Amino acid sequence: MPPRPRKPASFVERHGLWSDAQAKAAADVERIIKKEKLEIVRFSFADQHGVLRGKALLASEAASAMRNGVTMTTTLLAKDTAHKTVYPVFTPGGGFSMTEMQGGGDFVMIADPTTFRLLPWANKTGWLLCDIYFANGQPVPFSTRARCRDAVATLAKAGFDFLAGLEVEFYLFNLQNPRLTPAEATWPPEAPDVGLLTQGHQYLTESRFDMLDPPVGILRRGIEKLGLPLRSVEVELGPSQCEFTFRPQIGLDSADTMVLFRAAIKQIARRHGYLASFMCRPALPNMMSSGWHLHQSLLETKSGRNAFAFDHPDALSTVAKYYLGGLLAHARAAAAFTTPTINGYKRYRPYSLAPDRAIWARDNRGVMVRVLGQPGDPATHLENRVGEPAANPYLYVASQIYSGLDGIARRLDPGPSADTPYETVAALLPADLGEALTALRGDDAFRAGFGASFVDYFAHIKAAELRRFQKETREQAEVTAWEQKEYFDLF
Image 1 (cartoon, rainbow, N blue to C red):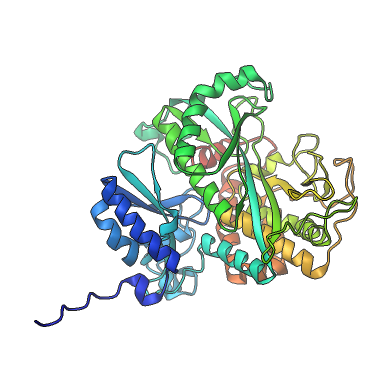
Image 2: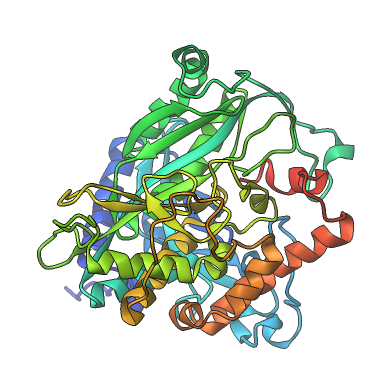
């Protein structure tokens, strides 16, 4: 009997894209698909803005698609927040000086099987996060997940693991008018009309929490069933504003969690007649700004000990001080990653429980970096309060790692604790996105860490967004209608 012809090697096999753990997870995913009798599996990747894009495949195609990939158009990597292409993709090199990026050709999404989830809100549906490659098997250099993975690997070479916990504020509204008439389908579309679920301004009160509990409970149960490490659910100061916090995770996991969390919250909310918005400051009366605080520390890879903890009155170890010095030194450039929207800079206001300058202090909510932990406390860590909830999680995390590593390498002194944060003389955070992009382009540590071509790519995308804003509006302190259309329902 002649031997059976050997099955052609898959895309994953030809290019060696999976670890042993991923290959094992892929087999587990196949079994779950059959056991749960799934009908659809969504393949998604986080774009340059941290927004999930992808395709939904029939479950019968999922096993092959995991190994051979799902094609997507390269123009997705050339779009700003209005989904408008800002590179000349139909010219030689597509504006990137890369043949792979010209002509609106394809790249390939390859699933990371370890990220598989069953969607609790969608019937018989699975969900996979993907990494992206060109057809020749080379990684797409504009993948933000890959850039974050690189940062984590660079940190590992220095002997540390990154540990991060998320504290995320957002708004949950009653969806009153989705603005679905043809006349309202502008590009970007008109922002939906919403109503409040609470009047707000009663921070952490039982009565306000109980008013929000029915709709927030729907979100909470969905997030728990998705398997994300939810820790707490709180009512914030603004009307219909809430906050979810998550247990710390190592490496890339916290960024993956944020990507999945934002997408899940928006999808669950919309299915139940609500609109969730991670826009920093919606253009509605009496709104407060929403922030995303990133709690972080380093673990010694060999021992697993917290490298920030120190049994001394200063509480912080030498490593922690230098890392903190790096966060402050690169704060203006990192703002392009931590606060990447035009709207987010309206949060940097004095006396607002938000930072407006690059300073630190012990347990003080007016500074950029809040030091938490007593001497010898194994949970000692830094809370960076600079970010907005619309930030791309992979770039936010990577910017922290590269800033901190540069601080350690150059032994940067963070200076004294700023116990009067809005009177302390220090470098101000950027006044707007334009200032942040200028600082980013000139930051040598980020150009070395992310790669100069990636920094220029990201700055180009965001500069196009800024030019549209400046063309269609005039600069002003209050939130504009342009911002509401651009960000309110996207994030």
